[in-house]
Structures are given as structure tokens and as C-alpha cells.
Length: 128
Length: 336
Ligand code: HEM
Image 1 (tube, rainbow over the protein chains, first blue to last red):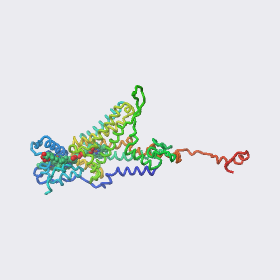
Image 2: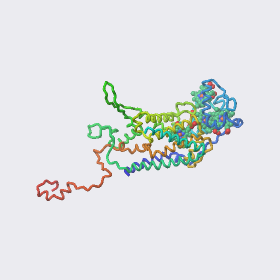
Image 3: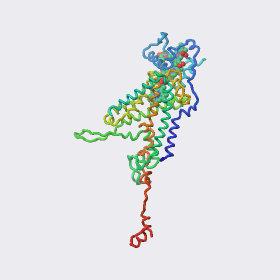
Image 4: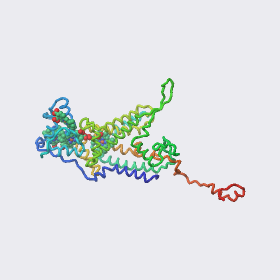
């Protein structure tokens, strides 16, 4: 092989970079985080829509709410079950899920999303 | 040859359907989510190393750098450091410009005939489009891959988060649109359209050119679908990918749709296909003798490594053999 030293070094560097997930995590298991529900949420028993829907589509629901409120002036959302909710991030979602750090953030940190909504919107002080 | 892109399209669609049906109908999550990705990775590493070592074993008989600048010669002739590098530093500079900025593609030109002035004449024109599509495509690909590290690292490293912030700066919708995802899909489409629409490029395009493009389009399209239109449980996806990264593979309980497995299957195919295809240019560019050799054949003697050891008889040896006879005959000799 010609230029063996250089070629093999390059190849090794490439494979070490490629193996990043293997050496970075050092094999430590990391299951999805446990989420905590507030007492209020526990009492309500269900979210605005089916849980499976909320897990996957809550961002799109919020986006829909935002457009409905800010553009069309509709502040009432009627769920699939026919229940009425005030379409509000702070007053509705964060009323039930007032434990942002142990609910929203826990999941968001795991999947590395940091919604910029909190630049303007507020959430309740942690109290439980 | 015209049907090459149809064959590739049919192949990609069928492979996508295979993964979709395999998961949605036959419940083969383990096959498409664990087994095939690991096999693909092994094929990639072994195949990649094999190709590189194969190239390393290939002798390069001559200095063949392509030059487009003045070679280093006499001190008063201006030397072009990057277009005709003379030493290692120059070569590193040239390679860096080539790999990071696609410099030689930037010089892409078009030749054609024009009737301007009432008579036909040939013209050469600088054309930037291929370079532009290509560089946007490659950087969007890189950014997308680095951002995807959020699925393979816990805690997620800061540079991944920072990149995601910059990439999502348009803040369109929720979940926010990533520029790189859209650019990747758009540029891959343009590169495909170029091969289908331009007659000259179409003529030299084969299935092996269309297939990887369509596969990448498939990856980007399924990814964007998953993020914005047919949502998946991303936390469950991360559980699966972290299982792969920590060698505790398991299929999590959450709601990961068959679409995710199509994405994953396309990625596995692409990764396993790289060593056997033109996509090997990712390693090949580093080993291109037309780029990575210094143009110094006037200063350094390069011996062809595959030269047969020829038996020579030099003039000095000849003179040694015949010195006395030469002197007798009155011929001049170099050594007395
Ligand atoms: C095995 C490796 C991969 C896994 C597990 C994976 C998984 C995913 C998931 C779960 C999403 C949806 C993200 C969300 O909803 O926020 C996604 C999106 C996407 N994926 Fe992949 N992916 C992989 C490799 C790739 C590769 C190699 C590419 C090509 C460069 C790619 C391109 C995309 C694109 C363009 C999107 C759209 C959203 C975005 O830009 O992040 N993926 N991927």
C-alpha cells in the first residue's frame, strides 16, 4: 500500500467520528423520561384530546390555536368529545400542566426541543 | 437509457412499500428497526475500508495533478500556489478549498454555439447553477445529519442544539420548519430534474445516477412528512435509536408509525449502498491523484512504482570494460 500511514490515519479518524454515538453514550441506557401529572390533571383524567394524539400533535394543536386566536379571533376550542376549552397556552395547557419542569421540559429535554414560546408567554411558578 | 430513471423510481417506491408493508402488515419492526440498520452499518464500515485500502494499493505511475495555474519554476515567474501546488501546504490548501467549497465545480462552464452578430460562433460561458445546487445540497445534508445526533446522544451535545436553533430560525409553524430539511429536498429535486430535462446530461445518466438521488429524496420526503404531516411519537423514536446506540436494541411501546420505518429503511439502504456506488466520492475525493499530488516533477524525481527492474549498462561501466582498447584506438575517455 502506498502512503499507508496517511491513508490509514484518515480512515481511523473517519471511523472514530462515525462511532460518535457509541463512545459518547458509553452504553448508558436512557429510556424516555417519566412524566409527572399535577393533581389537577390527575383529576381531569384526560387531556384535551386523546393522549396518543396529544403526544404526537400538541405542537400542531397549539399552532392551530394561535392562528385561531390571533388571526381569526376565535378563543373557544371544541374538542372531539364536544368539550369546550379556552384556546390559550398559559390559561389552559399550563393551568393543568402547571409543572412545566416535570412535564413539558422533561420530555422536551430528552428529544432536544426548546420552544421559543416562553420568550413571551408565561407559565405558572412551580408549586408542587 | 431513457427508462433508467423510471426503473430507479420504481425500485425506490417498491422498497418503500416493502418497509411500510413489512411493518404495518407483517409487524416486522425488529427487522426494519434493528437488524437491517446494524447490518447496513457493518456493510458500510467493511465496504468503505475495503474501497479505501484498494485505492491505497493502486500505484500512481506519474504525477498527474490537474493544473490550472503556473507551475513553480524560476524565481521571477509568478507561481500559482493553489492551482499548481508545489508542496504539502499547497496541496492541503487546494484540497481544503476543493472539499469545503467545491472549487473545481465552481469553474464549471458551458460550451455552445451562438448566432450573435449574424454568424455562428462557439462560446464558453461560466455557469454557476450546478455548483450552487450541489453545495447547498451537501451542506443541507451535513446539517441534517448533525441535527439528527439528537436521536443518538443523551444528553444532547450543545453544538447539536445550537445548530438546530440556527436551522430553525425562520420559526415557521410548530413544530418549527428546519431550513436544511427543505433545502435538502429542494436541491435533490433540482439535481434530479437536471438529469431528466437536460438532454446532454440525460444521455450520460444511468440508473446508478438516479437511484441515489431518488433514495435521498425519499429520505428527506419521509422525514419532512413525519415532522409536519404524519406525526410520530418522537420520544419513542429516540428510545429506539438510543437502544441502537447503546447496544440494547429494543422496539419501544410508543406510537412509531410505519412511515418511520420507511425512513429508517431508506437510510439503511443508502448507508449500505455507499461503498458500492458513486457515493464513495466522499472518501474518493481525498485520494484523487489529480488533486492531492504536488506538481513538483521538475524538482523531485518520481520513480514509477510498478517499473520492472530493468538491467542497465551505463556509460561508465562501458568505459570500464573497454578503457584500454579505447585508449589504444585514440578515443577520449572520461577516467584515466
Ligand atoms: C437511522 C437514522 C435516522 C433516524 C432514526 C431518523 C429519524 C427521523 C425522525 C424521527 C424524523 C422526524 C423528526 C421530527 O418529527 O422532529 C426525521 C426527520 C428528517 N430526517 Fe431523519 N432519521 C435518520 C437519518 C436521516 C438521514 C441520513 C437523513 C438525510 C440527510 C435524514 C433526513 C431527514 C429530514 C430531511 C427530516 C425532516 C425534518 C428535519 O429536517 O429534521 N434522516 N428523521
